[in-house]
Amino acid sequence: GGVQRVISKQIPMLINMGYKVVLITDEPASVNDYELPDSVERVIIDNCFSIVAGNYYNRAVELSNILKTYKIDIIIDHAFASHILFWDLCVIRGNGIPVILCTHSIFSFYLVNKNFEFFMQIPWTYRMCNKVIALSSVDKKYYGICGLNSA
Image (tube, rainbow, N blue to C red; front, side, top):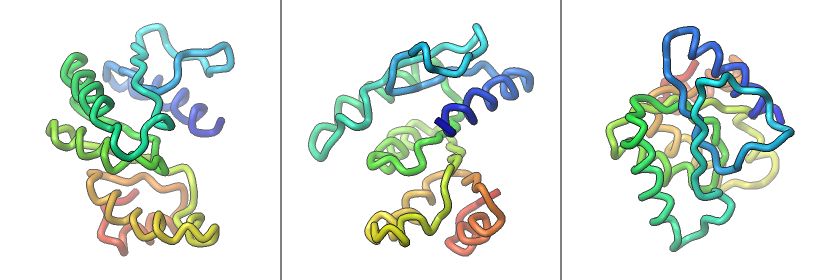
């Protein structure tokens, strides 16, 4: 999909800038994946779709262990609409790691699709991020009005 393609293009840029990249994903590699540089370590975490209220603890421990084991010093997160983004951000930020969140949609999508609860949560959840990368100048402006550091 589009998010996977963006990630596959973003990773080589980060490597060229001197970063060591660890790809944390909740799906194992498949033949349909975009090609990644050989230097990228892929770490599989519990699939977010299996997480419901009451069973997040194991993922929290797993995510925290990954952050420590791989000495992660910054996260670029593309799970902008995940139902567990808030909890993942709690773990990441609780480990003292900054987060850049890349959005891949327009801010009003959830409003138009009558998911008002999620729409109202977005600015509060995204506040846990150090930076929110938006697709358009309109989204950037909206996130800025919400008090978010957006680009």
